Image 1 (cartoon, one colour):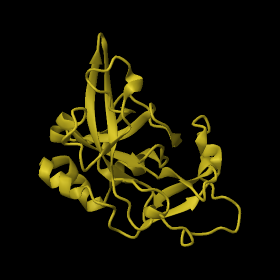
Image 2 (cartoon, rainbow, N blue to C red):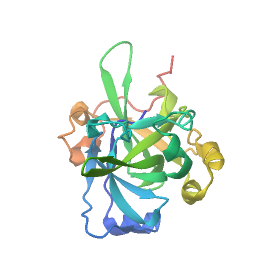
Image 3 (tube, rainbow, N blue to C red):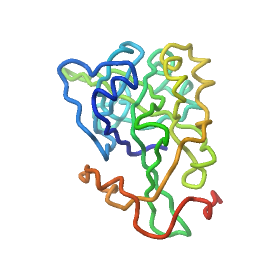
Length: 229
């Protein structure tokens, strides 16, 4: 799954990286600990030249409470689920990230958080679906992040991972038909993802500052001694 995100590169670099402009009338700020229910930076197929902010948690049309949003959707079955079926068909988006967080429990002990990021650049895109939730006079743009099987790096941490898109697949994700997008929902195929242990400060979403991404100061390095079993 993907339960926390971050994005903290300069606005001009973000716009250059994705060939899109931050939407007029909204402020972009660095975020080191984005939690469900917060706002995610997204690029939708309806506005591929704009970077906008959507509520993290796709809210079913029948829900009465925006807190009922679903933060992740399994890419293997999203086209079959009532909650995601329409969005899968026609509303793909990119969810922008400087790195996401995942937790790993070793030997039944407390869960250890990790930061997962791309070594080759300060930002990347995860595959998402967006929707518009309406309830009474309230309208909310919302988004979920698609997940898939883990790649070699992630399988030592968790049994799922977000669909991280290779850079050359980002535009295709927004413009392709549903069958082609289904083929893009694969474990990230490149070897430029990395991960390291961070402190449990990330567990509290009010901790939203650079210290969240600092590596733990101990002798543990790498993931090779851990297995997914």
